[in-house]
Image (cartoon, rainbow, N blue to C red):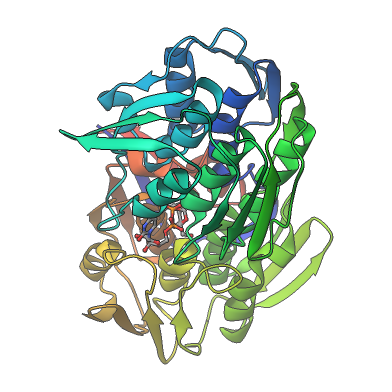
Length: 418
Ligand code: EPZ
């Protein structure tokens, strides 16, 4: 079994270029289905979830190959509209293929997506959006059988700004006749990146980044090249790591405006942060203080994906910090593991109350999900002695080289076979 072994107590220093955003790359790989031509995703991170998307694309009949750091997808040979259950279960984002396959083929057959480790993750908004565009969807025996009979542009009103439902609606709308208006759309930077990619493919789409996205159905897609935005959650992870251990690190390749709630929190905790186009520098003395309550909410609020790593940064802070998780029911599973290392965190439903402790002690802990797993590594970086983090396949879903990146910044960390 591979585990990550970390010896705490080293400050982090240096420069790091942040990987492209997982949550941009995955819907964009699904969007490649639409065009029937060759698309190149430049600098595509090597992630388990990217492998899962590539496996789905190959199953559908696309050719997918790595050319250096780029990923080339040729969807001209697409010949299937079904996705088998084992591929659907590999990740939550498999559901984004629904809108794209339906738009391209007029039908789609798939089961429910995996990735439910954060609690219930319904897809009712996705299905309702597609039905509004005219799709007929039969749900039976764990399968969804969808037929379009010719999608038609319509007004879709999302009852909450779901990232995935917005993406699915945008992709299906590309194949609908006429104009689709998506109201109460998610405003995450990854939606804006998807819009940028669709425009390069020839789609007339606008409004991403606001609550109203307008998509005109498209007949003439063409291939394109695209480099996705930097991963703001990977960046939040590295910034939290430096905040906790102390040190001085500059991150490149990420837009600081995508991270303002996280950098505000880390500044409040006592870090010095300066940002310029494409750069964020964080300096920390390693002794943080508790901060104002952190309420997770849709963008531009504090990202739920950064809750666990910012919590990890504050484990040894002076004072108390309250976290309120508003996005997912079950996103505190890392807390029990952190408690094994001596963290003082009390949980009550959506609320976690963290009281900083002077020291953490190394322990054997287990990843429960992607960001929770990264939080355990961050705890290990500041703990006395050695921490071994198990079940690291969760981390590999979203970080291309967490261990290598932290080692290059000076951490005593490696992957070992145990
Ligand atoms: C995306 O998930 C991200 N994943 C998640 O990142 C992220 O945590 C989440 O957005 C919120 O920011 C990708 O982009 C691939 P949602 P998604 O639909 O699209 C409810 C990570 O660590 N909801 O915006 O699945 C839902 O239960 C991951 O990188 C419905 O009720 O999130 C949740 O409470 C994990 N019905 C809320 O909306 C629906 O049909 C937000 O979910 C859809 C969602």
